[in-house]
Length: 212
Image 1: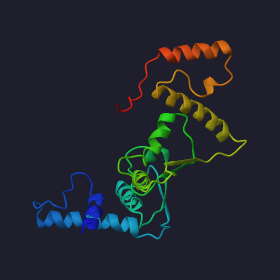
Image 2: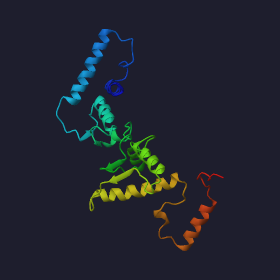
Image 3: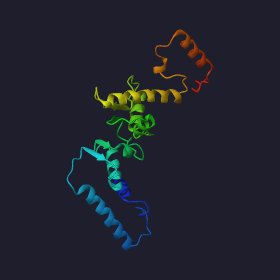
């Protein structure tokens, strides 16, 4: 029954009543069920591959919600979800049975990439459940969220990745309160190293204090 309620919920548009709404009259109820049936037919009436699905700008909202619901169930298909950048970087919760993100087209802005990764990096996600199990079992190998960029050597993608990597490194450096990012610490002269060390010693430390 709970699964049926979830399906009905994702089929509805905003303001179309609730599965627990007792105030709908018979005419309104028939009209609503006709809409829901039409959306189910639109989604499942045409033959298509089920192992992988694609979401893009023209994908209907009801289809997006149905695919998202199915993807978050480990026992159902699709097992692979291909999402256009604008669609897949916000408003989608894909964390309940997934911890691997494959970046097919890299964005220049590392903040956008963080949003894309954030679809599976959420509270009570699949990764966090595996982590708790590994910690409780005393495992030395802890699970992680896996990020796999697809880059072809000798193409524009390779240059794109190098720029993104540097910006990503700089962003993480700023977020963690570091004076210089990893790349900026390479090939420093003795004088530059002493200056960097002096700045780091005088800069505030934002890391939480260890428990007493």
